[in-house]
Image (cartoon, rainbow, N blue to C red; front, side, top):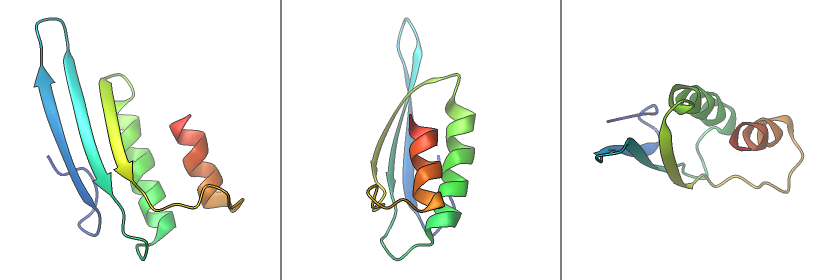
Length: 79
């Protein structure tokens, strides 16, 4: 299942077990991709998964030491 716009790489697997359904997503954002667009798309994607059991593996290429508003929004949504 594709989960983000075409300029990001993403794949999501749905795993059915006897006890529950688990989603596993692998997401890659190239360093040159627009950070604000990515963050907006990612937040929307995470909102969809909020009530589900999921694991997100990622290489977002985001400098979390920066204090700009986009990095702060990203950190707020993953915590």
